[in-house]
Amino acid sequence: MQTQSSNTLKNLSPSDLLVFGLNDVAYLKPATVNGESVYAIHAADGSQLALVANRDVGFAAMHQHDLEPVSLH
Image: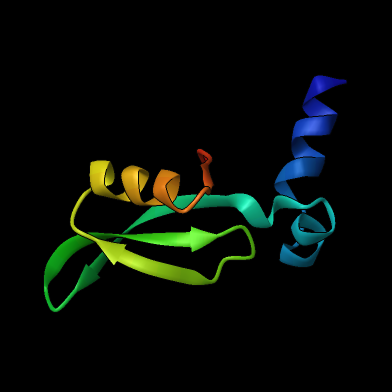
């Protein structure tokens, strides 16, 4: 049963996430800008919010803006 719930959650669309009130959730994603490795902060709907130099700065920025970091696997 837990596997079924996990699969259902993994297949939620961005609009489904917003319906659940997850607009206070963000995630970090590695990115490359002008040949440099950075991290992009994304909202639950996938829209990019900011670029930061490293993970620690990303998590600090999310907390500072009252966003809850989540892990994506």
